[in-house]
Image (tube, rainbow, N blue to C red; front, side, top):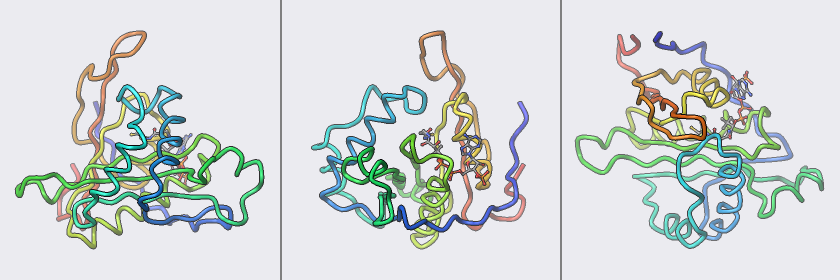
Length: 199
Ligand SMILES: CC(C)(COP(=O)(O)OP(=O)(O)OC[C@H]1O[C@@H](n2cnc3c(N)ncnc32)[C@H](O)[C@@H]1OP(=O)(O)O)[C@@H](O)C(=O)NCCC(=O)NCCS
């Protein structure tokens, strides 16, 4: 298999009046659960059996140490159309979260998840969330942002490649599906990459 190379760094999208980005708050858990449920219902992106409960997400937000992890949301703004508002109870339309690995030798690595509500895809929300994540990582001394993605998730892989993420490895037949098994890719972006990082 050929190793994807990063394309030119693309400019960061400017949030429109219809939406903006912000850090998570303790009261976001139920709206976050509803947003996660829409992504799980598609059945194409995640590998878990379903979204964590609102209570579990509330506990995750309460326990969040800003040096060790981050959760950021895209939410509807005052310029959002009524139909968009009706489609997003709680107002959240996307999120990115990342957590550093626990042990001292792995602290420089943060593992991320990103998702955008179906209605809002292709409008720069995912790119903007990923840009904010990279800013958090650089400020906290993270050296590598890493993720797992199903090999058939072309939209997500396109986003990651566009942002400079490269393939680090392939987990063969990692995900069981209706028609067989699917590979999972491990991809990563070095922050302040050293000379010769890219293969
Ligand atoms: C992957 C995902 C987060 C992308 O979010 P998004 O808001 O649609 O992405 P953006 O509009 O910011 O697009 C950024 C780049 O991604 C790529 N991209 C996004 N959607 C694409 C598509 N349908 N086809 C091809 N490329 C696509 C493009 O390169 C795009 O850059 P460009 O517009 O300059 O060409 C979104 O599709 C999603 O939530 N999917 C379901 C959940 C998921 O798969 N999460 C990742 C799990 S690993």
